[in-house]
Amino acid sequence: MHRQELLNLLRDHNTRFMDESGYVQRAISYVEQHDNCFYRELWPVHVTGSAWVINPDRNRILMMHHKKHDQWFQPGGHADGDADIVRVALRETAEETGIDISQVNLLDLSVFDVDIHNIPATGNEPQHKHIDIRFLVEIDDNLIIPGNDESHQVLWVSLYEVARYNNNRSTYRMLEKTRKLRNILAA
Image (tube, rainbow, N blue to C red; front, side, top):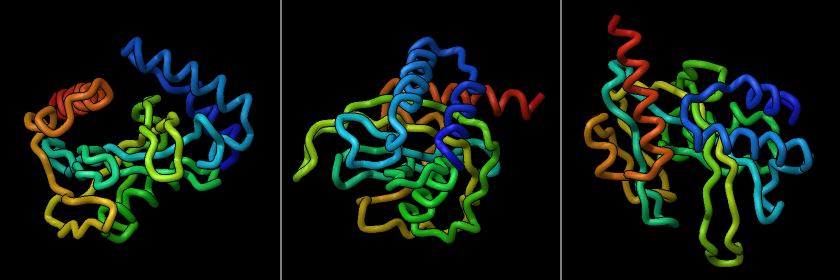
């Protein structure tokens, strides 16, 4: 995948959320202007990839308690120069959950959500922003999820309990999209 493929994915992404629509436009502009946007060394903004992980019944979300930020998030991370943001999201999901990448099922090649958020300064890294490109994936919730050393805990959370773990706006958007997906599948 080349930077142009990310731009195509972003241009094709439609959302009913005004805040996300703004993020998409900002992301397009930034990626157009920075051919090195996939490198974490690009300050103060760079592209990351993550996955909103649902179970086959679409009623649970996989959340991880991130050690570095002491918050609950979906799996994801830095592209480290890889322009294939889908591959980044899948790789990071496998790494952070500790399960084999063959068990991570990408449900759709299109973007599920886009968020731009602040990352506080830690260690040698100054405060910066992530343009996080999110994809919808499925993992069997009967699998053992060992996690890795980047998280305190990884667990399945009921759709109705996710806000207790993370109630930020981007999590709300992804929950709403999941509920809509459940309604479509139930019809």
